[in-house]
Length: 308
Image 1 (spheres, one colour):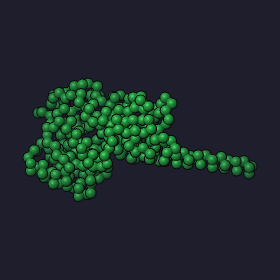
Image 2: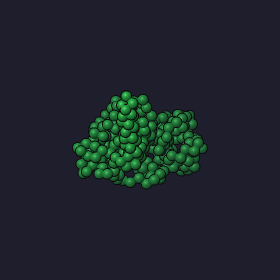
Image 3: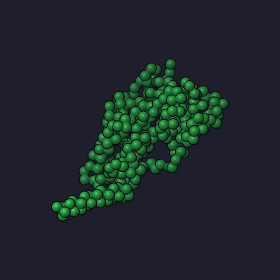
Image 4: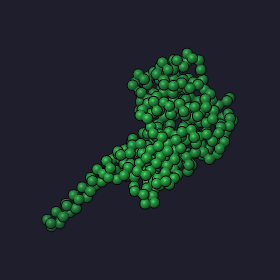
């Protein structure tokens, strides 16, 4: 049986135990491998120019485990956080308890089918883009999916590059235009090449490190909390009681704030993280608060000494 996904390039390494990176560069190390279960050769060479995600969390609803596995791996290579479910009822549950930037929804799934799930999501007020996948390519089926609230329709088999392009188009429509380059002080992110440099020096990052940095850079100038980071950068397998976010923040800090550069990544105790030059906005407020607390402590100590 031939695989329904063409041109996909899943990572060739198992996810790391600390949260889902695929090797030091975040991309599979082999240029060509075989699709499990069908023996079709898949090429990963195109992925470098396919365009990258922007700290987005997706829900993939697909009951074929082979397709779900390869699509999810390919999307994670592009720095998307992906939750996977195999039936309509679970899809509605996941969408009710999590915040997703986009849903990839197969039509022929157990329980409520994709049309019903799409209709229920819209009825519940969910406004995220929905891309429907199906092997049924009749015009009536496409019309039905769009009339039930879907934003786009892709028939199987499909090229993985086309899936990525459609996702990027839907995400552009769903919100503000996102610049291809982001600069914070002398730090530059190229979202197309998924590359980072500071003061002209290239900084190598893993896929998850890059996803975290891009999310922070897009929210530069304000404090973002752990829950917000976990919601947009990690998937449902993230353990909220772990220190994984702190581990990655420390990794980023060692890489982007090294070699005497002015620190950009700041911790605001009890609130979250601020990305930008110290003294600007919330970071400055945090420093002033810390300074005020420090001076009050010294004043209280002097008072106690005077009374003694």
